[in-house]
Length: 379
Image (cartoon, rainbow, N blue to C red):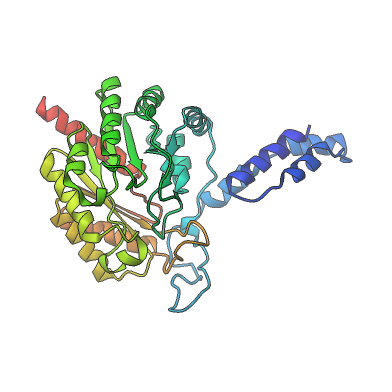
């Protein structure tokens, strides 16, 4: 039968955010086929869409030397840059991917992996080369009170109230997955008195209660610089405190929401370290928004001076036409340069690459090994 293949292909197209009208599906599903049975069988047993996408990306050379396309927009140029080959990824597939997605929907949980359209979702949810599935859980709902010009998460002045059962549901889901490292993040909730900090802390404590061995990273908002809220999370029992600086200082007013400030973010990171010196602190920088090399290096220096242990650098990707356009696609070789600079500066860990994100699987694998060594030394 050909019908299963049609429905599978349409589902894949919808996952890619391609519009497929319901009437088209009905017409395809119910129109009698005039193809011979032999041809039907060959189509049904043939490759699916993901086979073509996978094969087309597996052999991509990440070097920029042979790429003839334009990598930087000129000032005033309104045309979007074409995606270079090193930024093309596979369609997410696999049993683990499907299982995690189904459980998330069943428990009414959200992930930044989906909301922010992360290109690494297939690798992280599927297990990747390290064999451990990782999903970055987004607490406090899926609607943010801020409107950063790089982010595709929904916004509202007063989102729905937080789900009181979320800490328990989140901890239960994580325990059932058998993870050894989990990342918790959230939307900004300026509408809440504590910015959601106690909700974060409760979730961490519940996870640790069910599994004291699991390593927990919290990627948090800035709480408008309130050090009491920062301290609440820093002392909750987590292992890694992360807050993203996002971009260089001069671009911050144009890239982030007006309530977010470059120096305020540095204060949040410094405050977490002062509240709990045993924490590993972490931040992330997006490249490709028009920053200069000098500005990137200064941002890395500012982070290091604030006591940040780990830094990640990745390519900014325009999520929709309504968001900031990419000014430059940074080459893999340039990202390698920033990794070397980070190592020279003395960061504990620097992850730098086109597809690197703040919650990056390889980085989590590396950080977890450091944390476990620290635990062993204390014992």
